[in-house]
Image 1 (cartoon, helix red, strand yellow):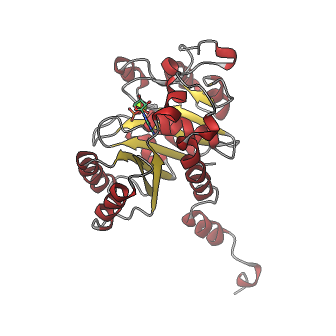
Image 2: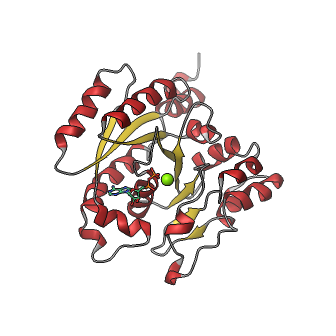
Length: 268
Ligand SMILES: Nc1ncnc2c1ncn2[C@@H]1O[C@H](COP(=O)(O)OP(=O)(O)O)[C@@H](O)[C@H]1O
Ligand SMILES: [Mg+2]
């Protein structure tokens, strides 16, 4: 199935929160993979079923050691675990110092994530720059989504990152703006900045800035999560993203046709 990579250009606009929300609402089997070299937040914020702590020894680092014998869906899932609520997660590195131990895993990992048999993968890639080690994961994705806020500096960095990224990926590009639901004008300004660029960003979404909803993904929530503005705004976004990556990409269709032309076209 498909890999969707989420990342930011600068700062902390809410990539991890958005990844957790989309993962929780994803309409198919999905694995949330923490590929942020800055270190895992999920291990700190979230719990296993029943409120037990997550096993921080099981994740990308243990996968890196195990993958020396080969990488398969089974090996990936053996180093994943379940969050309270049921979402499967591959915990990221505990600290940036552990990234060195990942060696050349990012590239095969991205390919494997994009080809898992039983589900999609949402990769929280954290902040990305030109020399980020996790860039190969982004390059393997079917859909790359940059998360930003509607502030001038966030949008300026988004622009700069998109201009660079377009030379490194041939995935579909999307942008999620995290903004107060009432600040539609600010979000429109982001879209007009994108319109003025030559980079094709076809998929544009407004995710609610909602501290009440976000608190649930920070280990501090109480009340009805499903009634929050965060979840209400994320429901349609998640459905659209999942639908976008449900069909094989166009060039895979083309290749299938080239390999198996309709019967009438055989003979000669
Ligand atoms: N949609 C949102 N609405 C309100 N607060 C948010 C939202 N997304 C993230 N936050 C808050 O912002 C902080 C950083 O969020 P996080 O998801 O960790 O960002 P990133 O992964 O980009 O560093 C956290 O305290 C989180 O609760
Ligand atoms: Mg994060």
